[in-house]
Image (cartoon, rainbow, N blue to C red):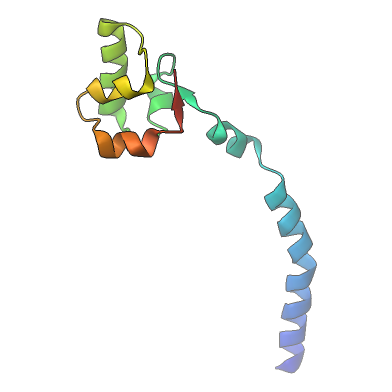
Length: 97
């Protein structure tokens, strides 16, 4: 049993630097997620990647900007049906014009 514990500990310690190094270097997918999404240019598919935005809300955003013109502020997104203060708070910092 002690031998098995020693082997597991040694294996864990060997893998630790590799895990740490990969955590320090963001992947390309992580970098994309860190970028803000333009609510004036994003497609329906891109908008659905935002938290709380499904296909119907994404379509409503696109329809709103088609009818009303581009958003002049990110807060104007609250004019879209189904996007209130709570959802907007989740989106804030993830969206831009």
